[in-house]
Length: 510
Image 1 (cartoon, rainbow, N blue to C red):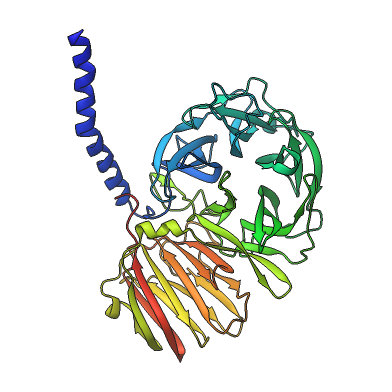
Image 2: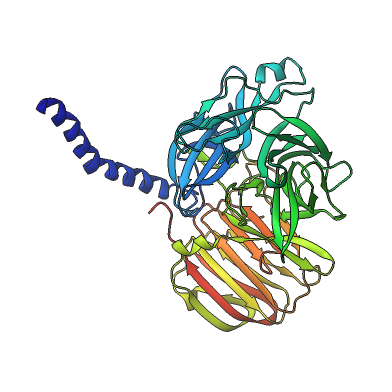
């Protein structure tokens, strides 16, 4: 008995002594990889695209994601898995869902089935249920139209392990080549689950009492919004609008985004449990940059709606110059509604949890910018990642230029005549891996407020711009040959930056 006890005990001691050290070594290696984001989620290795199955349960944010565990280019999709308590520091978990004879595991969602409508719960344990598309590559190659079907899996150990439903698929393809990305939510007034599902150029809505048996309710999308490419990754959420419920349908599409390739649009409207309707006539974009796609929200977060997207673009996602891993997610963002005249917009801002990685701000006030002003002379050595908050009372043309000794630069600014924000990565570093990467991208200013506020989250290989309290957002990746280490403010005419906050961000790998 003593011998049997001693061996496991000594193993446990060894793990305690060296396990943390090995983890620290792994994190240190990842932290120092060229272009590895320091405040954004990335897989430990290999390929990532769409965030999937995000559910908040028992204080844990679960993030699943499209993952090829054996290559850094797209391939047979699995569901990778990571968990966090603060949306920034992530613990990588084993692969959650593997391909099987029905197909590989494409995008989908997950819910906490608190009422055990599915019957998967045991001994009072709430089942987490994942709903996903299974893609049959053999059927696709054979020219069939029914190679994408919807399946489910469940977990009764709080998301640690997953069991596929024996009678999958739960929704069989009616003959559509694009039939995927189920996003499921509970519709309390009618005590049923509602699924938003991509079907080529529109969204279809299904309902179910138990997550197993589904009926089609309606369709939305013909002649509405942007149709430059196929509609994908929908998400139907409800937002509070001064005490009134408004429904928002998020729809990703590829190609056809506002600056080429992938993009994310949304519709504000109403939903009665069967049909989504919207009076919105103009196309609204959740993010105008080229590198925010396939974004959806966490389920089970109450009134709060937390969004995260894939930080890349299908134009070049397989070619970006990273080695051990490829692609990342955006920052998690809080979504809210904002009225501008007769229009209603969805705003996005970095989640408040970002405070956990922010250092004390360096505050500069009443900076007179004439031609070229070196911010580093006033803040001290420039380090990335960082956050820069700008407040300007008299609006005019200006640029914020990130640069290095090689002459590479990323330019972020505002064009008063065009009333546009812009990000220019034309000479930002490595750009020749794809012909469309080197470009200047623009986004409209959506308010005529006399005061302009801009917040920039700048990682080692990405920038996210949030202007006018999140009315305009832009996400952009870049790959300098050596890190940027300078920031200059530039203006043709003299302008005053009323307030500038420079905030260092702590690496999530530390």
